[in-house]
Image 1 (cartoon, one colour):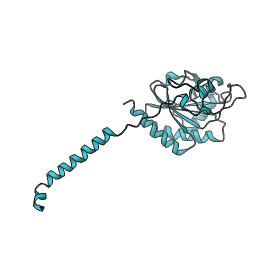
Image 2 (cartoon, rainbow, N blue to C red):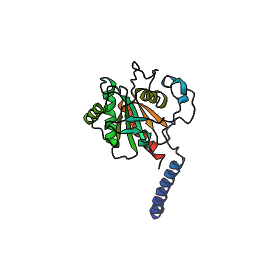
Image 3 (cartoon, rainbow, N blue to C red):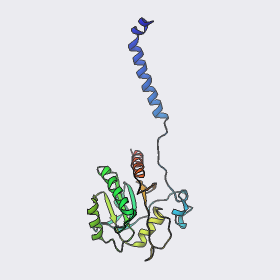
Image 4 (cartoon, helix red, strand yellow):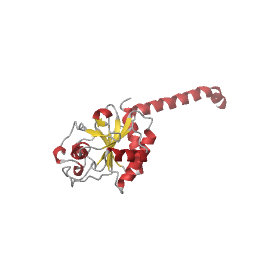
Length: 223
């Protein structure tokens, strides 16, 4: 018996290796490919969705916009053409969640700084305070890479409508008037078709790890 195995050991080893390869290939073929949800307003917590779009079940995308970044450049949706991006809402004088959120965004920027497919977009919710010079000062303080991350200011009503009707980022209602105030910890992942693919708590490290993972999953859709 030992002689028999000794005589054919290389054949057995070859068959074993081939079996492992075949099993691995079958597993890869049969394994479901991970894919992120495309979020429509009807799928999201109603508290986060403006009444006017609450029952929309398909084709929801981020609306066109025109704002100004930390360098005084006009930023529109065209600046994010063919890009995956992470959006949030903040203000530079915030002393509670915003510093944590911005620091987490800085860490995301550092990990993705060489990835040409991914960008960031932070909207000031106090545009009357966050002027271009103030945003520039804040961006320099935080180490923002201008080519990768726009911190934008502009018309308050436009920003607030984007938050509520496009990004579905806040639980409050309002008209973008002088006494309206948005304060949200949400990071929103947007794909190359301007569709929402994920929501994350920008103050939580575990959510940032999930966001990094989801960005890589999303990128596989374009390979």
